[in-house]
Length: 166
Image (cartoon, rainbow, N blue to C red; front, top):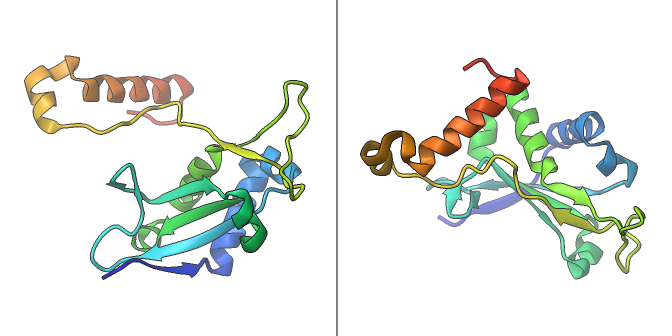
C-alpha cells in the first residue's frame, strides 16, 4: 500500500511547541513555523532517510511552498514508531529533528529573510555521524571497522557529557 499522510494531532503539535520553547529558543525567537505531518504505511516504514527507516525527518520548505503551506519547515513523523514511543522518547525525536534547523544569518549577524519576510533556514548535519554499517565488516575487521569506530566515538561523547551510562 502507498504511504498516507495526515496532519498531526493537537497533542503532538503542543509537544513540538514545548520542545521548541525549551531547547530551541532561536526558532521560537524568530517565530519559525513548522508544519507537522504524520505518515503511515501498513507495509513498512512510512518515513525514510537515506533509504533507511527513520522515526522522523525535517526539511526546509521551498519559498513557493511556504506561500501555499504557510510554514517554514516540514516535520514528517512515522506513525507506527510514534505510537510506540513514550513521551520522553517523543521529545528526544523532536529535539533531534529541530537540531537540524538553523536560522540563517548574514556575516553581520542579521537574520536573512526570504521574499515573504520569513526567516531563511538552513539544515545542519548531525555532529555524530551514524552512517550505515555491515555486520560482516565488523566481524572481519573488529575494532578497525568504520562501524565500530563510529560507535566508539558516540559512546565516548555520551560518557564525556554524562548523558548516558554505558
